[in-house]
Amino acid sequence: MAIEIIATGKAVPPKRVSNKDLAATIDTSDEWIRSHTGIGARHIAHEDTACSDLALEAARQALEMLAGPRREETLEEIALTLDMIIVGTATPDYYACPSTACIIQDKLGAKNAAAMDLAAGCSGFIYGIETAAGILETRKSRKRALVIGAEILSRITDWTDRGTCVLFGDGAGAVILEKTGAPREGPEKRGLLRTVLGADGSGWEHLIMPRGGSRNPLKPGEGLKTPLHLEMNGRAVYNFAVKAMTETIEKLLAEEGITIGQVERIIPHQANARIVQAAAKRLGIAEEKFFLNIEEYANTSAASIPIALDEMNRGGILRKGDLIMTIGFGGGLTYGGNLIVW
Ligand code: COA
Image 1 (cartoon, rainbow, N blue to C red):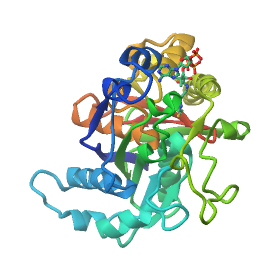
Image 2: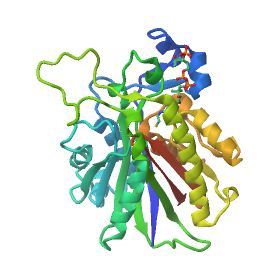
Image 3: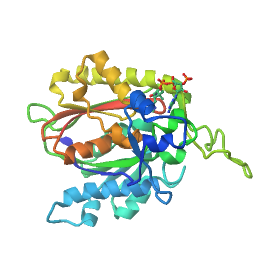
Image 4: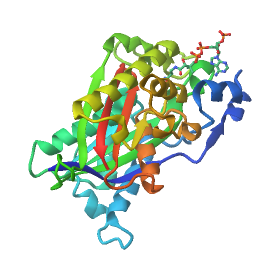
């Protein structure tokens, strides 16, 4: 029995904001942003677009991939085969209730699926894959799960803070997991081989939306100078991220008993190209092994890895049988990685 990724999808808003566009409104420059982060642009959702809109588009694309070019099955029929929907997000349509996953379940007509959101910051997709795999494994009758990472970070960004606003973008990515009869061990092994998950809660203050929750709620009549937004200790998050990436890669390799040479590609969370370069240098891994699309999309948090997977899948970069590694880290502070045979 294996848990395989059988389809992918992505959604990115059409509005593209380049570094030069940003430099027209705040004190920054294309040169600073590129040299410190590797980011060249970000895509920003229209004000009428919410998290579930992007998530739904990504999910539909994944379902369409399963429907095949001749559409042997309708999207509605495929949606009925889903047993679980998980949305990793820090920017749900509604805080507290309902979950964005329930909105997706309704819009897809996935009546047989349980649905929930998962709050693990930028590691949401990694956590989501492991959670969905566990849920599929515990019941024989469960076969398919839809795992989405979706974010509208532009809505919780302080657009006057140049230390954070240059980093983030909007987007969604989705995969469909299926429990198949393929082996999980041996030369023909397929699917999710293992996952590392972790957290360092002592760093919870380093990436935080301080207002709006039960600790510090908005009060009636309170005038806000800026919308609710994320605050970040960039240096602390940077140091954590390099360490988390390095240790997670090492742990996945050691636990699986393989070398980095056997891994075709590493798909890191797209937070900062410099974080990836630093981890690559520490581990002596060629930078080309890491797939990066941060230049176009910036940091889309839980969406960044499934967006990358979809681009690689549709672009023919991933071939059946390739051993790949996903590595995530972010708010919480959380981290994790999946080792997957494509
Ligand atoms: N444009 C121009 N200058 C900027 C700037 C911007 N967008 N943002 C910060 N600066 C300035 C600072 O004001 C500071 O100026 P000063 O020396 O005159 O005070 C200088 O650049 C250096 O700032 P610093 O914060 O030390 O830069 P840095 O090298 O640490 O890079 C980050 C900042 C945010 C790029 C880096 O800390 C980082 O990537 N952290 C991790 C962020 C992240 O990935 N978060 C999400 C995790 S999921």
